Image 1 (cartoon, rainbow, N blue to C red):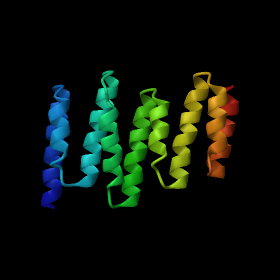
Image 2 (cartoon, rainbow, N blue to C red):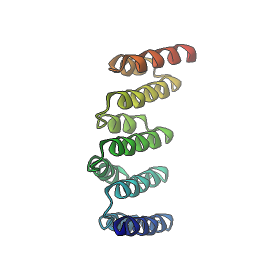
Image 3 (cartoon, helix red, strand yellow):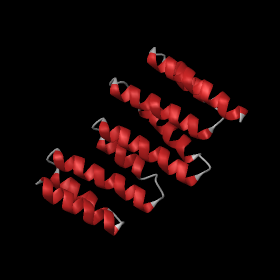
Length: 154
């Protein structure tokens, strides 16, 4: 229980550093967070804020992905990666969302991210790219859903 409280306190400190623009110190502080899930959440937050500000976020994103993969509970790891992928999709960075999706081992959840990326690309007029992604989706239910959504958007 102490580990969780320490992790939460450090997470809050990281958020304050991020809010003040001190990203380097925020990233350093994440190394001291003992809870792997909270550490992944902190690194994800830093990467997202850097991306929103137009700063170089790639190194922190890599660390966030690695940290999410280090989470012992597979479901929690998947949840952390999906959340990160959706954050980057919402920032209009579908390439990053696809990159993150490739690390998700759960077929259904990876397929959901791929489908959302495809629909985002379709909205941007990149229909052939969207179709390529949809055709590569392995979960047949998600593939069918994405295809019908794509058809309704055209």
